Length: 203
Image (cartoon, rainbow, N blue to C red; front, side, top):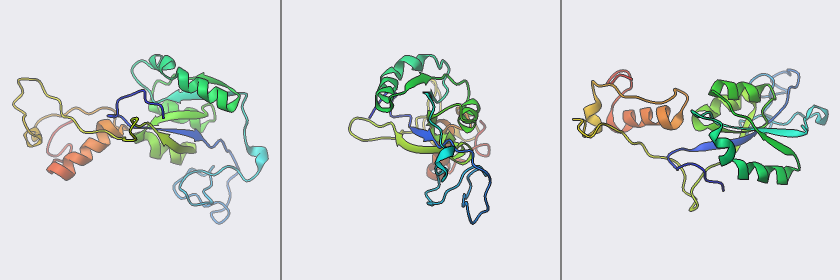
């Protein structure tokens, strides 16, 4: 298991199902919430390979992208070992592709320009439904533990000492699509402390 980031972040990796089959009836092609170009015949909530092997793709090079960060180029070297391993296992050249936004990463996979990706957990449901993303692995510590914990950071001289002190104040989150930086802490603040975002505190 590769570990390149602290366990405060959890990311999923996946290989996209690159199928662009013709629309079929619901009976022939059950899909649930998946986009109309995908089918889910086995009911595992992810896109299946096309039943016609002629519609499978076998690119000469595999394009890999990691979830967007402030300086995407930094991760080109971080992922070098993984890219070399993927190239060795597949026998294909693997190219690292820097993405500038979650939307750009999703569109690249949906259009077939991106083959393997590390999406942030918040984008996973969208990637699965809209881009045929099939999650199969995630980062973890060497002991097998994974996940993250919520930390509320305030200035050293802040009067905020407990989560309850946030009420009526402004709290900063990260991207709306981020699970670790937005969705999960919002849910925890509500379930554990009864604090509702944009009701009990501003964002």
